[in-house]
Figure 1 (cartoon, one colour):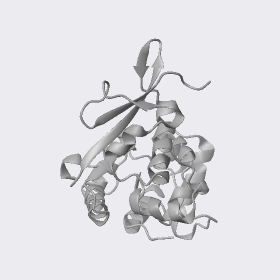
Figure 2: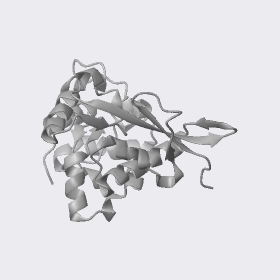
Figure 3: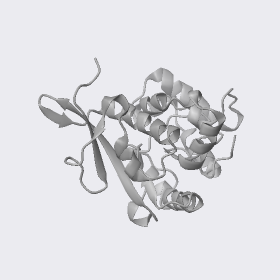
Length: 236
């Protein structure tokens, strides 16, 4: 494991959230009472949580991460992923895949005041953008492929990034029109992240050859940094 760059900030957020009861967390985050109770315990015992797998990449369970399928990577793949992939987090700001992470529930868009900050976007401020700039410089690249949701990428300030940002969009044919369907788009973002790592993609133009899950690049539908990938038939 590696140490999260914003571990101190994560502890502060956990301390703030530990003041809330499970019912408060349930109402705040719109989660079930069981999940709220679990996370209330996590926040209260933040410094003593013990779990078998501490690395961040193997803890996230959403559709994006399931379709990245990092458990199937070789050691070389893991090393490449750790150099090239960054995870935006409400709790930790920015994570490397190998960073030691406590399990938590805290969406970036959570409407709650943390200290003097009105919300998490204000709390993280420029820190996420500055960290990504450092990682871009270390990777010697001026291109960032954005596979985050809108909620999370709002924590980044694109005008402050020392990089061109390319945002792939995935659309499925439905009732004669191509539409972004969240359920499928999440999976596709994970499949594309996997494609980048498997193929060691360094030239963004090579992304236009992506054909995972039946999607294909459409020059006609793309506009500027919004690269659109279409699929004519969704899986059953």
